[in-house]
Image 1 (spheres, helix red, strand yellow):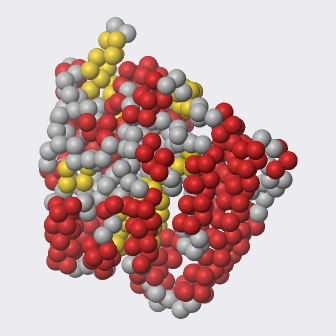
Image 2 (image 1 turned 45 degrees about the vertical axis):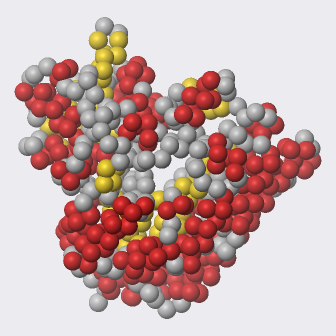
Image 3 (image 1 turned 90 degrees about the vertical axis):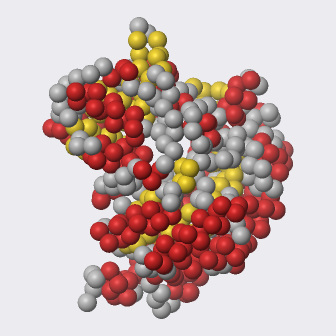
Length: 524
């Protein structure tokens, strides 16, 4: 029996889920190859054939990718790969029966946290033992989905080995490597649209567990020394800055950074809630290396925040953003222009909120529609109300006012091209701003303030352009007057703005490349 594994998933900015499983398998003597799901299916099939593994594992986080994973699994089988196929992630864990049905090539599902379960499954396969006795999996038997006894959540995250990280998956910002990292798992909040709480609530164990900050810093130190990582992207659903515990954890974390000689020498980004932003605490974090904060704002009106069960008010978000900016920190955000409670009035409120949020041009406008993820309270509510539409791989819902549905349908494609995807103008602007904030903290150069003004001018033009178009479209649909619908397309000037951005960015980088490259040892 073969004794290796191939793990396949999205590797953009790394995949810590796969990384932890791979590290656990390697620690116990198994060879592991990590592949990027975005690679050509034929190329993946050839690599898997060469590896001849005992196990192929798929990291399937969201339900929207089920058809694509099905095509890949089918391609592997058609190439003669006959070993055990398993899948893990939020969606397969919460909807094991549907996943096994829709990807018939799978032999099993590794449910919820997978490090120990995947290891035991691998050991059974390597030894030729019955793998169906492993706790924490799902499989088919006589057309039925069988769930084995649930495996409790891992109580001590520090007992896990540091995750494996394929070097090619690192994000590069101005020549500096940026790696994902975790300080905690789980979230104590219960937002109605989020599957995180459901994922950690289905099995025994504490729903939120936090690593020892000294071990987090030890991992950072290893990556800094061995991989030359200078930027760390914390992927915690809610970084531990909450309450008295958070303050104690932060104190220990900062002390550990100082002891490791990383204080102020590396940068890091975190995600947290608006009501966790405290000026004095975040000033300390900033001085230690925090440079960017992600906020899940989601809505700019009270009705939307209530529907999403954010347990926040608009004033809380406004205060948090003002605090972040006053401390000289960057921020990014998530925002849902549409949610199941949307009316024309709420859409207008959201447009007004976004206009104020992005007024100074330091952040581009981004938004989406709330998606009814499988297993979430909002999905259950929409189903009960008879408003859930589409299918499990592409779910949708009806708004209470059909005219709002028409508005969403009308604007989704044009705005989506500007906002979503790696090549979108919003993403280009976000990345240029990320470079700016890294330079501000790690490579201050002449004319940086002037370059910042340039970025603000391009960002402001983009923000004004897209919000004006959405506002005009909203007015036309609200009044039922097609003649009021904007005659111009929001994508019309996107190419021009993109070229202007890239030319200005490249010109600035070229003129300052000596100062930017010298700290990296790439320029003499």
